[in-house]
Image (cartoon, rainbow, N blue to C red; front, side):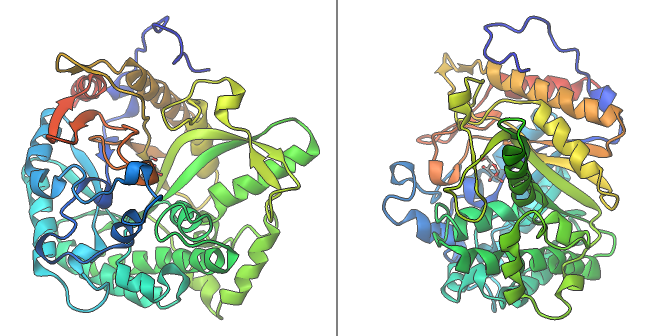
Length: 459
Ligand code: BGC
């Protein structure tokens, strides 16, 4: 049970970095569109997020990532700050349309140069780069050809990955192919609340299959050109529990678990899609070609698990295909973050146990975990006790799993600075570092100071 709502924690955590072991990687996570800005700088092409944010009514207060944290211009300053805070692992993504503006064809030397400079600076400062190849910003030109619904995406994606690994593979050792495929295909191609704003099963199903194929094909390309590389991919994961201990709700929870936690990892492990629990996935057959089952498989060096919360699920006749709905945290009178997500540290423990129980899953990294809270900047300080407490409690749950034998070897806070939170705009603040989006001034929050001290405690 979280103590986040109580005024002051009753007892202090005695969490120590050393308890996680020497080789444990500690870092922060970000994504290109959420921080870079420079949306038209130096030959960058438009991405689906540039297009989506320009449409009215899609994003909170019509905001966009045109400037965001201006990381494109301020990356050096941010990296120095990261180093000062004792953070030595940095997860960021490459913007596909910055390096290949039209998605395929002629690369953009200036875009490539930007990532070379970023990577070089990281290495010079003793910060290990962890690179995500796709964090949701598809080149807009490719979306005009159907984007993730078009099987051609496999060819486009392979070309993009080949470029990245050839240009950066001698310096980058840790790669993640996709960021949370369920979220970008679900929000972008089923619900239409994220770019490119498409809806319906006719878009969702092919997008699932093509993303799952790219997940494995991208990994094979990295290994082909950089055999020493460590290749992973990341998943959004939530601990799922039934609302009541009755058969209907238990089955509903199983369906949501299959959708949220199993849909993309199981085909990679050679287990196929979780069709038994989610009957509508049978329709994926329409998009499958002979040999796809093998193509979907890849033995990743590590799996990136991203967890924020848990979901409570109830059976519902009214929701098509899944016949289930979640009971909002607000209605359950539990502690919540500014995203209205339940604070439930046990969720990360349960998810770690679950992923570790797949025989073929080796190393696991928590590639995202963190919380948005309303921050108050007063006299140059942000006393974000709740965020610190959140991180301590979730980390304690990670440690519990590790002590029980879960092969978890790293933890990345989402996120380094406040940034553009997709459809929610700049309102939810997830950073360890506050950003004044008018002046671009950075202010380290108390949670950032806490993380820094924690990381200093033992090298
Ligand atoms: C995504 C991030 C996002 C974070 C908080 C994850 O789903 O990878 O891009 O900002 O969660 O919502």
